[in-house]
Length: 155
Length: 155
DNA sequence: TATAGGACCTCTAGTCACCAGAGGTTCAAG
DNA sequence: CTTGAACCTCTGGTGACTAGAGGTCCTATA
Ligand SMILES: [Zn+2]
Ligand SMILES: [Zn+2]
Ligand SMILES: [Zn+2]
Ligand SMILES: [Zn+2]
Image 1 (cartoon, rainbow over the protein chains, first blue to last red):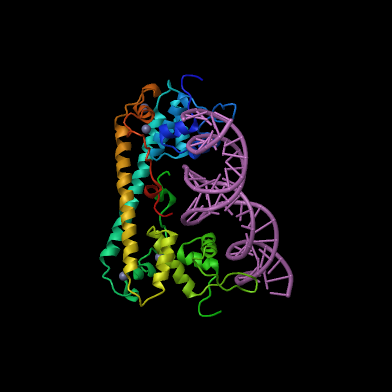
Image 2: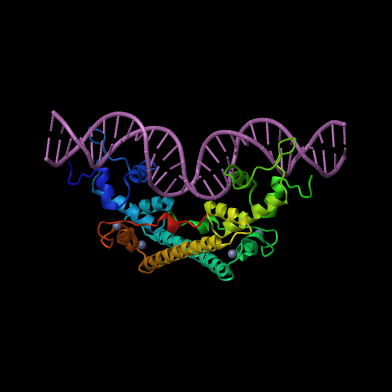
């Protein structure tokens, strides 16, 4: 019909986002419901393609869907100042930095574990020992573990 | 009754693992079902406490529940050689390192984004621009994004 | 010993961001 | 017109929990 006329599969090919995911984005309101053919199949225009690409890129930066929603809203108001975007990106950067530092500590601990390990039998294994013993744990014994904040990065 | 006799809440306090999580571990077979009081409440012994602590520590290292299961099985055979543990830890270390490198790349990109940003109006915002444009994306346009592997770290 | 209230019980459903599959319909090339 | 790839909806699953409803039990104090 109009200049551009993509099926959902076309959109998937152009954006690298799976068909099922595009439909999912529609159900959660990230993508607007497109018009349909007489046979009930989705047909998208260039605008939808751009929008989906924007989403794909934002997700690749690890923004949550909440944040993506926010970004889309902002992008839809081109005459407003863009401070909020700045804030969103800065926030995301902090998240990522925190995750990196948490994971770096973890890496060091794992690496220690591996290096103090000299093989042998399970009974004498230092790794098992380390996992069994919590005398080194903080009092009150909070097993912080990996917080959700630390553990995930957006996908 | 026997030497040690903990309620589920006691276990939670001693290990830092929430009551609901302990019950969850039981349903998925990580913790064996303990005996009950006449009134149907769980009563644990020292063995259960140790096991739960082991689990807590392993989870804090970011091992998946699958891996924890594996570790528990190994720990239950103290006369066997402990190579498998070595392998499990090494595997985990590689995972963590991969995540760190992925996140480090991401951090750099976000940081770039922030620094090439000089405020103003959304229409001219470089961040929005970067998110909208995919001329810099690889041909075939695979939006790798963050793979699940990259994105999570065990919790 | 009676009672108050904190701790416990089960079960369901929600989280995040999708993905897989079943079972059926439509579209487009040949 | 036929074929088969692509589309449709709907359901359920993923990992590792967490929250809450609605009810029962345990135990310390008066
Ligand atoms: Zn060992
Ligand atoms: Zn501990
Ligand atoms: Zn801007
Ligand atoms: Zn792109």
